[in-house]
Length: 464
Image 1: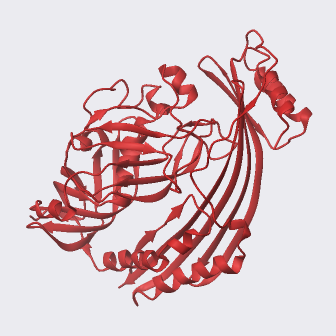
Image 2 (image 1 turned 30 degrees about the vertical axis):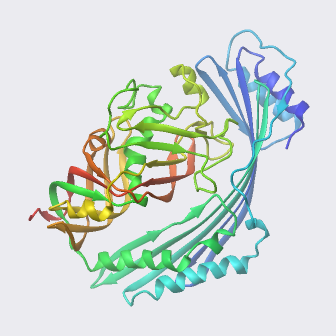
Image 3 (image 1 turned 90 degrees about the vertical axis):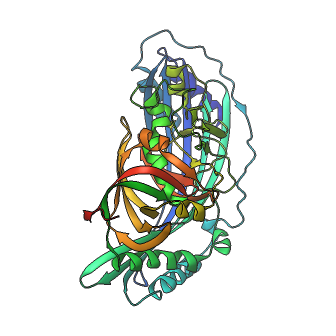
């Protein structure tokens, strides 16, 4: 993207006013987004985004600047302007970049940029047909197709020079069911760090019908009861609760500031002994995976919790300085417009020993949250509330009638300790995670698990 000499000159200029580390992040991204509503293509947007971000560190301070002007003079001026915010002795010149190659764990067979629009539209039509045809109660179906090809190059004053090519593809299916003036929605959004070949391996009709099944089930359901009782959270996207209520609290972004409930608790019991959790950015072709993080470090499998004991955090370079800990390959950013910080990749609770059917059979009364929706979390306290997009009452150890409108309320640190059964059916779901460095792709996941007691918000009093 830039010559090695220009990169070296810019990095040297960045240290001219006392910085002790500088980093360039260069990005060239091509993306396509297509929207289909009720079988008609409504919108199709393709674009290219190119730019360069420069970060300078001085002890625990950070300066960040970015531009899409790649002229030598403009880049050197940006570096000088950013450096002027710091005061100190100039760093040493004579930087020599050492190019390194990181093997790709994510083979791409068919690049989306080489696939014409009619083939992409055909995938969407298949999804629409399956979703719409599920039931006469389906009143609307929206399909979103997205693909991204991103080339990045990272250089820093440690001499690092490394690049990465990232390709992601996703299909989002949203169905709305109507009955007697009421509407309920269902959603599925499978995605992979993969090219267009994803659709050769993906059962499009299954996901489309699942989105409609959720909508139809919920529009015909009664309202959920409220109260405190056991809650079984299903595998796959059920992991969004751990991601939001606990995962963010294990990122150095909050730990280094002391604003996380998990700060200064390494080696302590923070969860049930049944709970082990990891963040793993190395899984081949997984939605949240990368070969390198956005500071140029190889991604890795980070054990966060082992048998209930807090074993580690997700750490980026700047917050690692503040915590006196090494970076863990966890630095991410949406684009060159954002400075990197510690973020999750593919974060999930590991398998336990129980069969999912056994967990239900062992529960006299409670709520089965089959599919989770969105929610809100206070990162400092871990307090959360999440909507249950598809739920069922449990009576006498069996799934009873479906219920809608349920909300799960609690604190992440408390819920971790109340997990008393963990299934053996780990699955993951895909989403976009927002934080200080923008929105990034992230997998969430878990096996089916039971929380012994939890506050459930609903429309009527509990009747057990």
